[in-house]
Length: 310
Image (cartoon, rainbow, N blue to C red):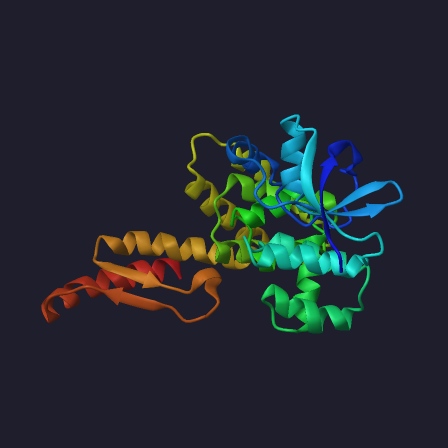
């Protein structure tokens, strides 16, 4: 294949054509200062089309050049007859061998190939190039992520959204996706807590036959998040307690009773241990003592407190 190195007028470039665009977030901001200092190091790759020149690779470099009012850029121009899949292969290999691809970009790659290849070929040929085992669930997960919008994609790139939760999030409509992400934007939930938060909302949604948005509004999550006197940690704890109460009112009441007992036992050097959300029926009574005489003295009061509450 003959590739021509040419000086190209940016007026000929079809910036609106994103057939081969996979970079996310757009890299133009990061490249402007670099191009100001030393110019474009690696020539972008273009392909002729009936309307003008399509960008195959180097969109960020070309957009930065346009921002800097540069009129002409030296580019590699492919033959007119170059196929779409070859162009996709080219842009992906260029990125994989230079800066690499983030999870969102890998998802966008799968979406691009889906226009040209069967599911089976993508799983067998494309996923291994992206660092995934050739399994159907990876293919479905990347398709799900590709269907999300900017807010979720940015959260993923910033490591503020658990990828497994992101895949589930794709099953909601845009309104409910936004509600869920708005909460994540105000609370710094760990990856495991995000999954728990999702599972609790999912259980409540099934129990009440309501959407995530309806549940969030019903338990006044927005007003909780706007309470200035509470720290993010306190808001998180309060939110999970509220969800647990809605999800398991009987258990929540019982848990409150156990905590009340523990508070009274604390002065006697004793406490009750139990599993979160009372997943197990059994509990453990822990007593600190230095001698048999001490425990004999404490025990009647401990038994009295427990007997009063239970």
